[in-house]
Structures are given as structure tokens and as C-alpha cells.
Image (cartoon, rainbow, N blue to C red; front, side, top):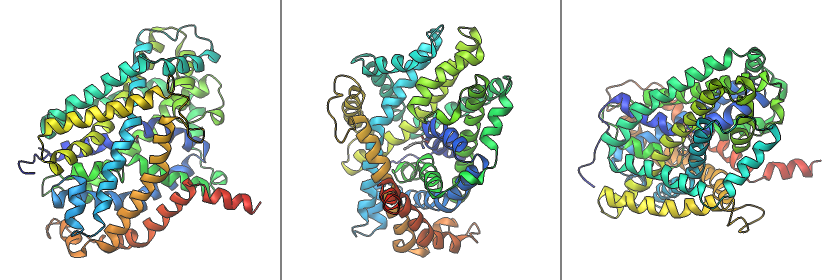
Length: 463
Ligand code: PHE
């Protein structure tokens, strides 16, 4: 438990946490749901969700992690004084592990698509064939599994190098790289003919599309995108130095996360409009990323040209980097937990976590091929991991975290930590506690009920 490392610099800490936040969610979900749900109106609601819901919980997770200097399960055990609230920490560790199992599979796909783009494999492919290219790849018993091993291998390598020379050093290289790639891709995209239509689609203010389900989607997206309730932020904050400004760090991370998400829209929509595709027909997620976009890029930048090849390769590499830094944060949650709670070395803990993740990740990966017959209510193993974590574990974790931070955690401790023991002013303290007590639990409770389909059932009942 001792000899714990810290992040060596403030910027390292911010970049590591931003690496966790910026992930697939920013690129394959945010732009599409924004465009389809009222553009700038959606962004405005999303920002409110970040400020009212995300930031208070992010700050609380940071606070608990830094105060205890322990892994998430240990941290909650310490701050809950042995009460059953300690289970919130364990739930976070479990959620992180659970998400990593299927998240790595998608990370592996991004590697394969980076390779396909580099090999110019999309030249001359007719639009309708991209779906079958994707499904024959994912159903192959070997290829996705081999990429999965490679992806998890890289995560393992970074984790075993430690907090400073692994996670921090790596984040300091990868996050600026990610940012440069985003900027380059945005520049190429906005120069396409017709780009302005795409940007209009993303940014037009259309409140008529905003209804309660859109607001709930915005909350869910904010939550996932900020990596809340899965132990990542709490674990990373346990490596923060005592003088790290928690609120400022949380704001920095949220700003970076949101900017990347909006810029991803500037990459995706100009090309979609350039080729005259209907953006309302595109489904966010894997279908957008691996079926629609490879086609869009070929058409927009010239079938088989060097430019199309490089653009597409950079885009999938960007997804890879985004997925990788998020996966590292998830792995760290489990590694810190095993190493500290079972008192084994970091290397041994990381190896154990890697082996377990590889086994379950492989099951998720094979669920598109040889294991596709294993289904529960029409969901294969991958979908089960995805749905259960998104619909149950995350909202439940968020709900419990905000109730715990608002109602149970000692307020004096909260204020002390927030103000770095009086060094900083924290005029927003009361507002923060009010939000944690009332606004976040109600809002997250509603997301939870919505995910479970309760509102849809009510709507149907009301006709
Ligand atoms: N925040 C990441 C994203 O936007 C997702 C993530 C989930 C990262 C869980 C870490 C942990 O994709």
C-alpha cells in the first residue's frame, strides 16, 4: 500500500484524466446524436449536463481519490468508515473491469481498420459492401482476436511501466498527438466542397427536436464521456499531488473532452454532406465508424487516392489512441485494486488483470463469430456487456456516488479538500453540495429509469 507513486506534474495529471475521458464516445456517438437532436440546442443541453451533473460528481471522485490515496475500493472503504457505502467503490471497480472487456474489442477493431486504410483496402469497394466487410471481419475467429491481444498488450505494457513512466509519460505523448490529428483532420474536412452544409447540420440551433428523451440522452452521454462512476477518476486522483486544484482540474478535463467531441463533428459531417448522404439515417456507434465512414472517406477524398488513404488511416489511428488511453485508465482501476487490496506487486496485479480481461474480451470478440449462438434476449455476449454496463452499472454507480458525496461524506472533509485546506477559495462549495444532494440524484435517477425503459412503457401506456 505504501511507496505509492504520484503524477509528477499537473499537466501530466490533467492529460491522463483527459485521456480517460476522451474516448470512442466523443467520436462515434457525440457528433451524430448532436446533429440528429437539434445541433447547437443539443450542445447547450449537453453543457448544462456537464456543469450540473458531471462536474460535481467528477470533483467528488477526484476528492475521494486524492484524500485517501488509495484504489477505488480502498478509498470508499476509508471514507465510508466501514459502513455499507464501501460497496460503491467496489461497484466502481467492477464496472471499470466490465467495460474494459468489451471496450478493448472495439479498440482492436480500430487497429484493423487503421491497417486496412493503410493498405488502401477500401479502393473500389462499392458502398453496399462495407457492411459485409465489417461483418466478415468481426465474425472471423482469428483476426479480431489477434488484434485484441495486441491492443491489450499495449495497455499492459503501459500499465506495468508504472504511474509516472507509464501512464503519465504516455498521456503526455498521446494526448497532444491526438489533438494534432484532430486538428489536421478538421482542416482537411472543412476544405471539402459542401462542408458548410455539414457544419450547419451540426451547429444549427433547433429546439424543436429537443424533447425529454433528448435531454436524457444528453445526460447519459455526458456521464459516459466524462468517465464517471467507474473508478477511473478516483483512481487517477489518488495519484494527484496534495496541491492539485481539484475543481480547476475537473474543469480542464471537461473542456478538453467537450472540445474534442465537437471537433469530431467537424471531421465527420463535412464528408457526409460532401457525398450527399443523409445524416439522419446514420446510426451512431460501430455502424457509423466501420460501415458508413470508410465509404464516406473514399468518396469524399477520391477513391483509392493517397489522400483518402492517409485521411482514413489517421482517422482510425485517432480512434485507436482515444480508445487506448481510456482503456489504460480502466485497466489501472483494476490493477490498483488487486495490487493494494491483495497486497501483491503491481506487475503481478497487472498480469492477473490482463489475463482476466483477455479471457473475457476474447469471449466478447468471438460473440460475433463462433460464439454468436450464445444469446440472451437477442443480445450476444458483447452486447450484454455493453448494455448491462451502460444501462445498469453506470447510472447506478453515478446515483450512489452523488448521494454518497452529498449526504454521507463529511462536509468539513469535503470543504477542506476542495479548498486544499484553506489555500484556495471555494465559494461554490454550497452550490456543489446542493447539486450533489438534489439535482444529480434526481437527474441520474431519471436517466436510470429511462435506460431501463420505464419512460417508454409509460409513454406507450398513455398512448
Ligand atoms: N469516456 C470514454 C469515452 O468517451 C469512455 C470510458 C468509459 C472511458 C469508461 C473510461 C472508462 O469513450
